[in-house]
Structures are given as structure tokens and as C-alpha cells.
Image (cartoon, rainbow, N blue to C red; front, side, top):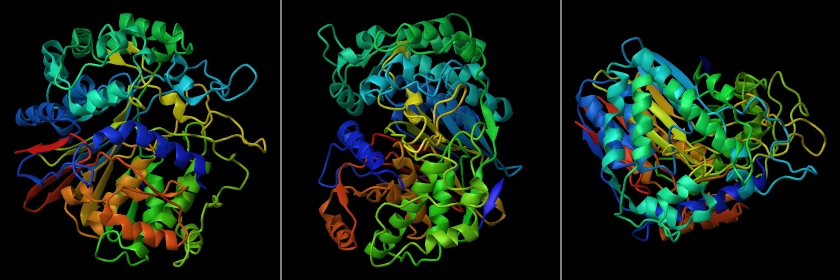
Length: 581
């Protein structure tokens, strides 16, 4: 385990702002503050925090049966596939951390999608080498990577599962058979989506014959997905990675009239989830752990925490000077992230160099208390050299879901799961949507100087991710918190906000999740609207920051493990809940 003490492109920030404003404004239905307040949930034995009440209830049912945290995570994920299909499911991927309380073992399971074997660096270029329009690339078969969530969950279940695999699908099968009432959130995002952007099966499922989306409260059934789940419950992940389901997936991708993809049956059959070493840093006597590359989350968060640790972040949340220091550290970390981090099986990701204390001391000297540095440039961490990797051209979208679970024995799962943008590639097969995660690669393989971009498309490669399931430990590896969020590159900002809110500002999980979202992925200073934060925005402008206010929607799911029991916080910006006994 890696353990270290303690330029991003403006285009990335702008794309993130626009995507968030378009896709997530519907998630803030009430009140001047933009969300519906929620109260802190407490429990003694076990807890599930998930993005939909039905999904959380399914996970809780497994815990009540004596199931493990991974058992509950599987049941929760399958119900999310039914009731929150725009965000995650078996057609996508996931990255998760598992904690074994007895052996004090923390593992990182990588179920990130892979590029097909026939994929080439010019996958998202047209015949004359011009970058494809982003919407055209995303809503097409060419964007579909080999799904990995099922393989990762099975790998974790083989190690930590207590209940039979078959039992974990029962809640999702029942809901898919009997139907569920469409939530306000799903209804609103459908209302903002063009029916013609879907392939035929998806269009028929989500819209009526006139192309109108089903409204809030409409009872939606998915017998095709129920049958798919029944097959997977009986035969395991091989039901998806081989046979008729695999044939239907490849046919849908290869024959997509909007843009044919390269996914084959062999790609599905050859997929393997991986176990990786988590990345951990020490911050104020706590060990903060997250996922290794191809996730960029833990390394970037680790850099920011190490950069800000010598600063006094105060006792009150969101004071101007501490926020300035945090944002400047984020600029430096995102510059390094975008230049150096990618799939470590293809690119030598200099994780230890990026978290090297001497290197970060040099980078910290660039943070000035009285003015912003503006756009940061990447540094040169140990064992690397400038120019080895090209200037990144990756544009990332928002999306995704997160699950945090603690079981009766103190074991835990923190899992971030995604099909990328809302409804993924908009291809539905046998009741589930296929991801468009390949658009997390750089669309251009080299930069203007001819240097290869680390996150370029390559056959079998996993695109860089911002997903970062996180766990925080006290001395002697005592689990204190687990958390995570959806939100594309904003995941890193949301998780950082939560970590600092908990460890520096001593907020409980619910208050930490509700705290205004802020940060920078390298461009403007991003801040949620609300009159209570106008003084912060004005103060940041005086320090030279460009400020952008918009519905900066997170979906934090936080559990605290305390001497008195468990505390759970579900982000008030979404419909998630924390449930426990």
C-alpha cells in the first residue's frame, strides 16, 4: 500500500459546468438553498447510504439477514439499475473499496470498463482526423466499453460474501417485475432528454408512442431486465459475458446506426476485474484511503490534502482564506492529474512521485495567500520528466452513483458506480443501458507538440476515472468514515469538501454533505448559488479568481463509525437516504 505523509485545462472546467447545469439542475427542487434538508441518521448495528430509497432498503434487507457489506452492496446496485437507470447498472463499471474489520484488510477492486481490442487512438476522430462532436461520440456504439461492474462485484463476493449470490438479486427482480413509481429525479432528467437519442428498446421503455417521457409517479415495469437478472443470479457474471446476452450487446454496439462501435464477443469473454493496492495518505493523524489508478481520485485528493495540511483551515466552514488555499491546491493537483494519470497497465503513473513530500513542498510554495495563481502548470515529480506525456485533452462528463455500507461485523464497502453521462450511450439491451465510458479517454491521442497523451485510447485500456470511493482511518487502522459521490471530475471536489468538513471543521456526515459545494478543476472557482455564500464569492473575486455560480450537484453518501454507533448522511441535493438499525 502506498502511504505518504504528509493545469487543468479551462475547457475541462467549462464542460463540467455546462454539463452539470444541464443534467443536474433538476436535482434541486425546493428552497432558496436549492435542496430539501435531511436529518442525520443514526444506527447501532449496520447502515446503508444509497441514492434511492428502494435501493437502500434492498441493501438493508441483506444486512438484516446477516449478510456482509458486499452482499448488501450487490443488492443495492441491482435495484439502482432498475430505479436509477440513468446513473449506473450492469452495463457499466464500478470501483470499490472493501474493509475487513477482523483482519484489518483494505482492498481496492477495479471494475472499470476497458476499450475493445480493436479500438485505436483515433477512435473519436473522423475520416479526416477531426475530433467528433462530443454528443455524437457519446450517444453511439463507439463510446461503449466492456462493462466491469458485475465482474468486480463477483470478485469481491467470492472473498467476502456471506449470502448466496442468487439471493442478492431477489429485490431487484421483484421490483423490475412488479414495477416502481418513477421518481421526480428520473422524470425530470427524461424530460430533458430527446427520445430520438435512444436506440429503439430504450425509446420504447422510457417514452410513450408519441415520444413523451413517462411522468413522475408512472409505474414502470422492466420484465426484460428481470429476466436478465434471473440469468445472472443463476449463472453468475458469465450470463452477461458470454452467450445470448453477450451476443445482443455486441450486435447493438456494432450495428448502431448513430455510430458503430468495435466491441466484440471476445472482448466481453476476456474481461477481468482487478484487485489493486489502495492509495493512502496521512492527513492530520488520519489515514485517508482511496482507489488507485486508473482512478485519479485518491492521488489527486492526496496531493491536495498534503498541500493544505500546513495551513490553518480555521474552525468555521468556508472562510475565504482557507477556501482560497484549498482551491489553489486543487489547481496544482488537477494539473498533475491531467498530465500524468492514466491506466497503470499502459502508462507508468508516477503515484509515489506525485505524493512525494519534497515534491509537494516545492509545489506548495506556488500558493500565495493574497492572489490566485490562475491556471496552474503540471510539475515534474520524481522519476518523470516534462514532455514525456502530452498536454491532456480529456473532457469529462458528470454522472454516476455512490453506495456506502457498514455491516454487523464492522466490515464496510465504499463503491462508486457509473455508466457515465445520463443514460450512458443511450443503447438499451435486455432491459439495461450500456455505458459510454470510452469518452473518458482523450479524444485526441497526441498534443500540439506531438507528445502522446497519457489518457489516449488504446486497445484493452481502461479510461482514467475520477471515481473515488474513500475510507478514513484513525490510529491502529480504526475505521472512522466512508464516503463517496457521483459527479464526474467534481467527485474529487465533493470528496475533498466532505473530508475537510469532517476532519477540519468537525461537521457530522449530514452537515458535511449539505455544505455548499466549491472548488476548481483548474479553471474558474466553482460555487453553488445561495445568498449565504455571496461574501465568499466576492472575497474570491478580490483574490483574482474567476467565479462561476451554478447548481453544483453532488450525491455524497457518508457513514461515520463512532463509539456510540453509526451516523449516516445522504446528500440533500438528491433523493438518496441513509438507513440502518
